[in-house]
Image 1: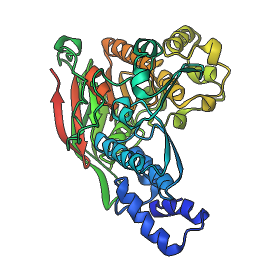
Image 2: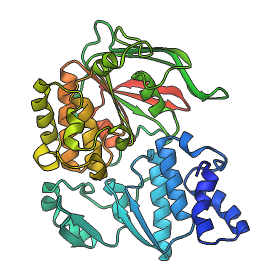
Image 3: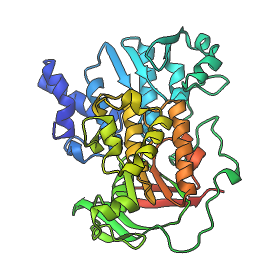
Length: 404
């Protein structure tokens, strides 16, 4: 539905809830997922994480007897993810609802489980049983690329810090030499001056963003849902035009550049992978617009990302799993080797093998002189790749920190 409150009420209407009961329940469940006061907001104007919260509110509203959740925390900031998992813990304690939770954030979710089912790449069970018994198969599960909680007791997560830039338990920053930024010399690849943007004049999304990004930098763009990360990413590559200030990509102004010039200079991977697919097969998607000499590079990239074209090339991009769609969307941009690569939640839906392949490919891309800006809520990714962290809060830069 167009408006947030109507979207939550839609399911209740179909179940025949009385009007007064719906009027009480809609604001109640929106508050539970962190969207208090959003009833009149336009749903499509919400950030990706806020839309995720709205979807959760819609399914929680009717207090279902069976609740199936497919990576519900994937696009939530750490505070929102912890709050949602705490809500699931309350539902579990009440024993009124059966919860089936598909989740890669296993450190936070593991303690909710009475039973764990681990599947292999073909969908066949590897092991099923109580959580502690499943962990006895750790080496076998790790070999299959399955995320597991860090060794040690699986205690409930501690309350999140007000800042999203807080690494989770068991995740340590890599050694200094593993990700030190290159010496900043010469002109930046990307710069903004007093950049601002508003979808509506009375509601600006970004204010006074000043950035300079040099070759070899790996920037993690963090911050709460609705803070402006995705909007900033789109402005940086010319998908949106500023309402204030300027953006420059090397010698280009995105608003004045041709699509061909922009495609060479910058690439953008959407939070929702299916938004950028243009063809009907995986093979056509990865090779779209490439010359004959580029085909071998595209084939190699797909193999490294676990989507070899001899197995997936004839499939529709829309029939891939969510994690496979994410890797395909990454490949379609990476194969063009843009100088500025902007990624919106790049690790969504990835098992350990897919995650490690992504890190390796991004490292090679940066070593060739590019820069990466990754908008993410995945603090593990921040720890593994970032040489610099920029935190956006309410459309402003709250922190710009080089990690050494």
